[in-house]
Image (cartoon, rainbow, N blue to C red; front, side, top):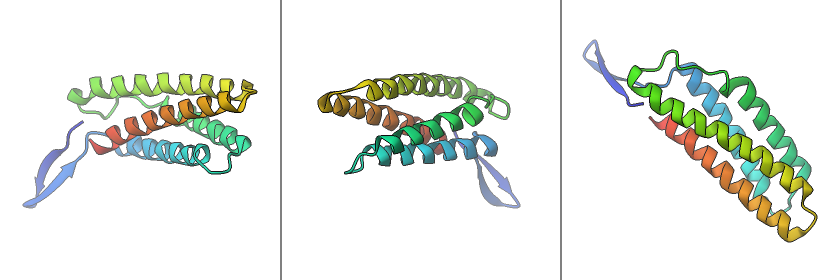
Length: 135
């Protein structure tokens, strides 16, 4: 997903390989990730807010990210986009499992370990979004 340079009326114009609609979806998804990440790293943990943030992230993922297709992508970008999309889907499934494990944790030490895993997974998802949005 590299930029193509076009010259229109002698002016250099960059065109990104990610279509505008997909770009907007990934930007919203990244914002939801950031919000959930801020809930998980707050000094006062609010497990209800974390759960609510996850539910919103999951809803956004299912309604916008999963429905995206390769239409509008440059042929040379399709393979990379599919790989990243597959990884994002995998990380979301694992995040759902992590959330279940966090809810089931009874020991504060176990909760802390589960929360750290959730943060790692959210950071991974954020990096995937950054890759898609930067190329």
